[in-house]
Length: 292
Ligand code: NDP
Image 1 (spheres, rainbow, N blue to C red):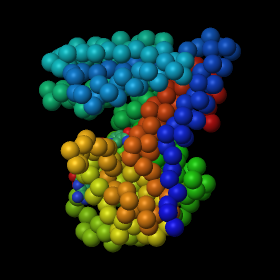
Image 2: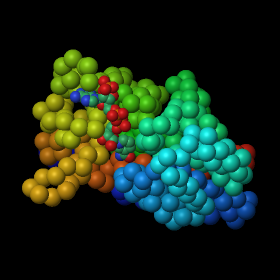
Image 3: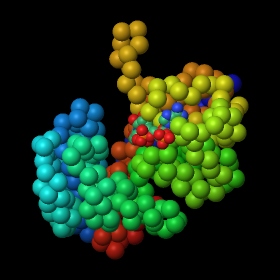
C-alpha cells in the first residue's frame, strides 16, 4: 500500500494561520506586535532565499520584520554590536543570525551573544541546556516542525523506536532530545555508525538529516514506518536542477506507512515554527499566556 504523504506545506499554512490569529489578538488586546530581526552576513545565495522568504512570511502573519544585511567582511565586533542593539530593542522579540557565517566569524560566540529569551532559533547554549534537561526552552525550528508533524500524524509517540540519522547541533541532536521527551526509544546514527541499514530497519520513525542526496534506500525501511526527510539537496538530473531529500523518495514511499516529501515537507514547517517561536518569545517577554 502506498504511504500517506505528510503534507508539510498545508500543515505549515495552518500553523501560520494560527500564529496570525494570535498576533491579531495581541495587537487588539495589548497593543503588542511581535517583532523578528534577521541578520544576514554576506550574500550566500541559499541564505538570501531563506531570509527573503522569512521576511515575507513574518509580515504576512502581522509581525514586524527587520533585516540587517551586513557585508561579508564585517568584523566580529560590528556584528556583536548589531546583536547587542537588537537584544536591547523592546520591539524585537526574536533574533535570528542566518548560518553559515563567513569563516572569520566565530559562530558559537555570535549565537551565544543573542539574548536567550530572543533566541528563536534555539541555538544558544542556555536553550540547548534547557531542552536537554526537559525544561521550557526555545526549541530549534526544524526539529520542532518534524515533531509537530509526527504528533499530528501519530497522536502519541510513546514507546516508538526512533532513529535520527545525523548528529548536528541544529537538527540531529535537538531532534533526538525532542523524541526522547515524547518517550520514544531513540538512536542517533552518524557517519561512523556500523550497519546503518540494520539500525534504520528497526525504526518505527526515521528522521534523516544527513545532507546526502537520496542516501536512504527503501529496503532499509521497516514496513509501515514513518519517514521524515529533513534533507535539502540541490542536484542536477537529466539536465534539470532538482531538489531532493536524504531519502530515496519512491522506494521509501513504497515501504513506509507515511513520508514527508521534498520539497513540501519539513522545509515549510521550519519557517512556520520560527514564527511560532517569535510569537512565544513575545508572549513570554510580556508575561502573557503562551500559545498552545
Ligand atoms: P550537517 O552536515 O551538520 O550534519 C550531517 C550529519 O549527517 C552529521 O552528523 C554526519 O555525521 C551525518 N552523516 C554524514 N554522512 C553520513 C553517512 N554516510 N551515514 C550516516 N550519517 C552521515 O547537516 P545538518 O544537520 O545541518 O543538515 C542535514 C540536512 O538537512 C541537509 O541536507 C540540510 O540542507 C538539511 N536541513 C534542512 C532544513 C529544513 O528546513 N528542511 C534545516 C536545516 C538543515 P558525522 O557527525 O559523523 O560527520
